[in-house]
Amino acid sequence: EEMAALDENKTWQVVSPAELPPGARALSTKLVFKRKLDQFGNVERLKTRLVVRGFEQRAGRDFAEVFAPVVHKTTVRVALAVAAALGLSVHHLDVSTAFLNGTIDGDVFIKLPDGIGRDGQVCKLLKALYGLRQSPRRWNEVLDATIKTKLGMQRSKTDPCLYTRTDPKASPLFLVVWVDDILVIGRDAVDIDHVKSVFKSHFKIRDLGEASMYVGIAIRREHGRMVLSQEHYTRSLMDKHNLADAKPKTTPLPPTWSLSAAQAAQPLDPQAAGEYRTIVGEVMYLATATRPDLSFAASQLAQVMSTPTHVAMHAAKHVLRYISGAPGLSLCYSKTRAHPGELTAWVDATWASDTATARSVTGYVVVLNGAAVVWKTKKQTSVARSSCEAEYSALGELAAELQFVRSLLHDMHLAPDTPVVVHEDNQGALRIATNA
Image (cartoon, rainbow, N blue to C red; front, side, top):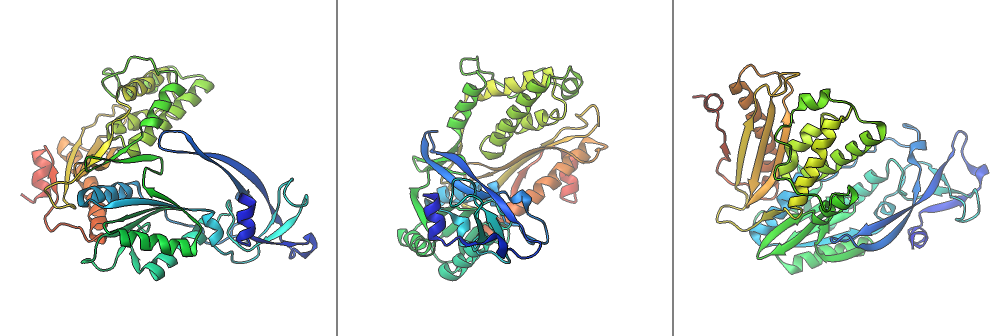
């Protein structure tokens, strides 16, 4: 299937090694095998990719510009929260062999792996094959031009992977792009079908219908609500770390947790340290996608990554046992009586809670249509001289995040006219913020 797609797209032209220009070299390639899972963790299909070993490329000779945007997770959550509030349909398109739609500037040569074609066969690339440093950018340029010219949609100024209609009075229609995975969000079936028709006429796509899984997050509709979860991934972690039968914990971190004590404890051996870093990465993945309740724990554990200790490992296992107590905890967006773009935020800060550096910790959450779309736990970059200063610094961090979300909503023609309600409990910070 992979080789057929490469031939169909006229990906390369076979050349003689003697035809290579002076100083040019053929990049090596390899076959990569991958399993694609559905929302329940079952193998949906097996994929094979022929990829270029792009690390062999030389900057300035084999490639120039390589940047390609990737949609912000906040954008995905905001778009789905809006879909829930407005009762919009959410469909999923997957562009097959997407990178092969991009063309290559200049001469790039590859050598096919053994077993494909004649051994040592050299080809001149005509299309942006997977693995090339410039391939993501080439594909994104083609996709962007197609959406703008064929669908008449405009790119968001806030997130270049969000597309909206130019007419604010028209029926809502949004596209969310994660490389080759596209969410089509709209009210009218005619609009959604038109988008699919345009994509089918320009690319080879798989129409996955109503979205059920997007970038590792399960999506389902329940009684008019949009529910985002990672339950299967969470349960798989329990099996992976032999905690399926362990007694769940009721708090993300142990009540006696101390970052300074964890950092000063006995270091783990190299193998256990590797396991610790794996656990922290898994917790951070959940904490940044659908589990704001893990944000503080992930932030704390990440600060012991360079030299993991036995105390930190105990805390990491504690976090996993906490997760096991509620593996299906989800973000649930719904219709509300409020404006579909009305935001509410909460912010707080510790003061000099890090005993080693005296720095404070910021924490905030932004809610849209019944659930969080933004959250963060972050150690402040400077030492606050008072609790008021720490809280005011946290307010400043939140204000920047709110500006991003409001700009997104403005691009979607859904920005409310009213200010965002922010809940803050420090009177000194409130007086400074309001010039009182």
